[in-house]
Image (cartoon, rainbow, N blue to C red; front, side, top):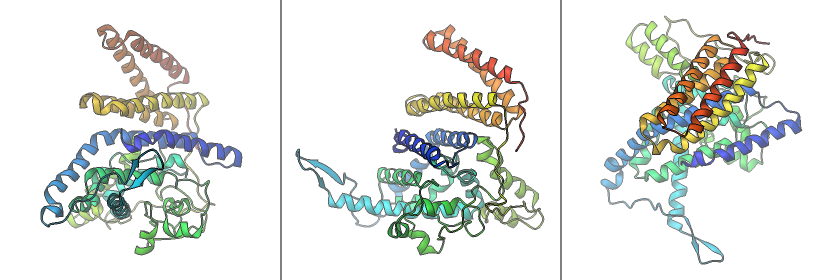
Length: 430
């Protein structure tokens, strides 16, 4: 189990604390449909990571083994031992100075690499296509921190290759990168104001990161830091939070579909590159700034939002649809946690099949929350496949009959509930 997966219970505890704050402070920080979308995207991202990390970490190890500077120069390797270790019974801990220095330097280097990875993900259209997922929520809360791309890691790994060339062991890199991402969880909140000036000067804080997620004109493409805001101050990309931020995209996603959230900018790039003339234009569509458009393709109209003119995407569906979607979201989330726990110990085709089924369920939930007919049709098809698989497992004895029977009961109850809802749950925006 990775460090991030081990931190999932803590993430949910903190989300619970923020929900409690919302109730006590009478603040509106969460919407159910948006939060389900956040967590659905986070779940799919973790499932995709099971397969993609084999490639990205493998490339890091391959580079370190062949091209690290220690292969060509008489340099010592990094002290990758435990920086703190136990001695005796009391006082208990001693410091390994060399290891502590190594871990500290690597953590700083990883954070600097993250700054450039993050910055380029806003300045290069292809990289933005992966990163856009994280910015597509129109809310700002701890659940948004879990709203991550399924595909971005396949492209941004290259920014960490200099660490491999420096000979940083892959275990140190993976650990420091995970700690970097865990730090960034708590800064996705509106419940914390500005902190002391020393903290705001050095560290990335909720105030700094609210700016980064905002679409106010003066805030766009600023504050890329992971842990240390120092990088933004050094490279001229820092802006202080002054005006109330408006969150989301200048061209709103307007969908709860996690598949479309991951793919919509890739589709936009493909369509624009196909329509424009000349290889220079086509390449600039892919590798140029996200805001650039060729002269022979009409530009997508972007909106400049303020707290006064911003209207959030919030389609209205019946209470029955909402409860059905929420119930199956909880079931699917529990199943996903189980799959993540066993994914590395089962054959790859089985892991992929389970991940696909979970992604399908989450996509259908998104469609239902939009009131789309395709969500109803695909969900009914998924339930039928659940019944078929349960019946086959019961007949073959591949799983205990109680489990297969539970699958059939789940199908019967859910199919009846969905049938009662109706095929075209009405949706309209308020």
